[in-house]
Length: 325
Image 1: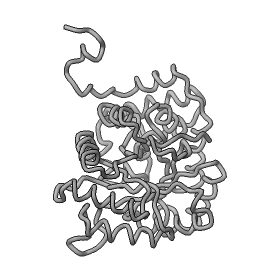
Image 2: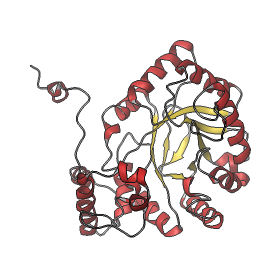
Image 3: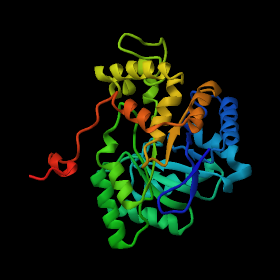
């Protein structure tokens, strides 16, 4: 396992982050704790969860209790956590309640990176950023972080933080895999320019890139078969074309598709750590193997060419290529 620095924070994290969303859900408590132990044996010190992941925070809190200061921990706030009208969003009220509940469930007095889980159109950005700054000053979080915001929203927040001398976002968490590459257009260049860490979620595309899917190939069970949200997210015909070609490529190179999919994300120089997840130890091993896989430049380019590269942020492509008019 290699270790990388998160942006300008100086914090060293494993180049794989384990996402504990399955803890207490798709993985029972015993399996969850076994996966945590295996991650630690492999050298992972970076764990991601959220307040809306069921019992995930509680189980992860039990796992890390004996070694809290050796763990880099994230959690998130935004989504609905109760029946009250104020149990959602990025208001000071919801965030203050959210952090206390997360700290209690995680059995810790601080969270290393605290993510705003989505964008709140109802709350002024200044209010959210000042609340994060207060939480940092109180020692309840070390750094603010952001997930599922557009690049312009993150940029606006960085400007406000600089102007008002507030704690800025130090870590971004976008979706990223071989068939979902939109973050290459503006989010990753922004992160590189501003020296912000990037941990990406869904490297396997909800299971699409595990070798189980193709144009005319579907398993009996799985997120893309049973979950409407994932069916919508990965519903394009071209996604299944890519999945089939990717599976064939992995077979030709004698590597499991899951391992190769994670390794491809990891090979992007802007990515600090891909977030891997699993429902059982067998699935976990395939993703862990990416830490030891050596992706050549040639392989990276060949795999990248299996999916559509997103259009650049500007139509002036001659500026990007150096062909001036």
